[in-house]
Amino acid sequence: MLFSHPEFDHHEHLSFFCDAETGLKAIVAIHNTSRGPALGGCRMFPYASDEEALRDVLRLSRGMTYKSALANLDLGGGKSVIIGDPRKHKTQALLEAMGKHL
Image (cartoon, rainbow, N blue to C red):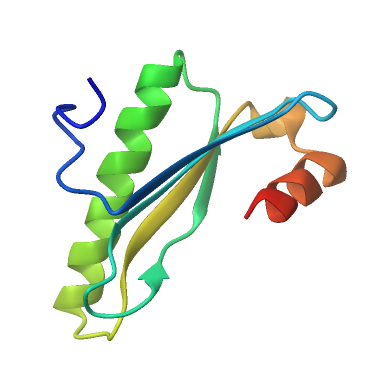
């Protein structure tokens, strides 16, 4: 199911993180590193489902690959998403847990 996902598009790496203590649920996607290390940021959003978060991180990481190429940077594309409302769930402990997983 995952490799045939419409947004998968030959991603090189996909990681899922969960930390029960902080409530962290996150996904990291690296689309392509043929031009260099992945460039991308982290989005925290209250996704309605895990599927919606997966679709978004795959789409965003692929977009970073294309943006890097268009800017002629020696970088690939990647992105991470944290499932949660930043106004309610964004804590230092949660962000530190994300950093440890990365």
